[in-house]
Amino acid sequence: MAPGVSYFINDPDGGFFIQGAYQIRKASEYPQIDFLSSYGPLSFLLRVFSQTVIGDNLWAEVALVTIFFGISFYLLYTCFFKISNNRLLSFVCLIAALVCFPRYYKFFVVLVPALIYITASKYAESPRVVTAFAMGATVGVAFLFRHDYGAYSLLVALVVLFFSCHEKLSLRNAISSSFVGCFLVVLP
Image (cartoon, rainbow, N blue to C red; front, side, top):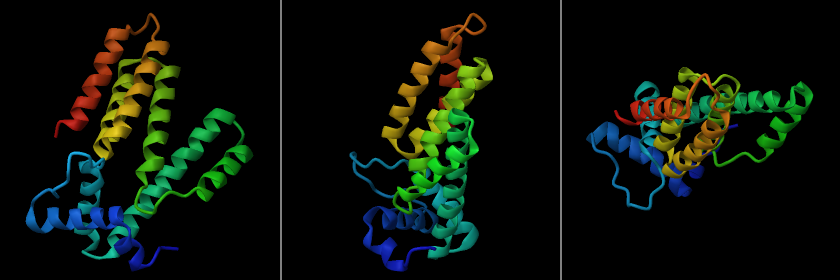
């Protein structure tokens, strides 16, 4: 069930995202934020897309958040299953995660860690240039949502790269591939 209008108006960050997206669409200018603001451009640009497709109303935000939370919790279930190899335990863990539901507008709180875990575990299973590139791209996406998420994801990626390199792929090539993936996502 979607929250009422007052939820988005009373919460400063949720309203900030909606208003920032509206400002980008109508005035073609990025919202003014201070140096300490932790939200990156992807936090706004996904909402711009949503408002463009659905319209300038709260349904655009509700649709965007519902879709991304669905994707995020599916990826989280996949992570739980990959760790436990038990569907029932994975489902119980997912229910526990749903009980700890974050703020409605912060779907990336679930999405980013699930994505970095999936790409890092793919790289650990098969250290290749493609999987290193994908992990780097995920770090770039994390950085575009929030710079601190990007920093945490980068630390995870570096640890995985360092401990998962084999003779098939040198550490230098793996880090280079990850850097290129991250750079190509963040560059535009």
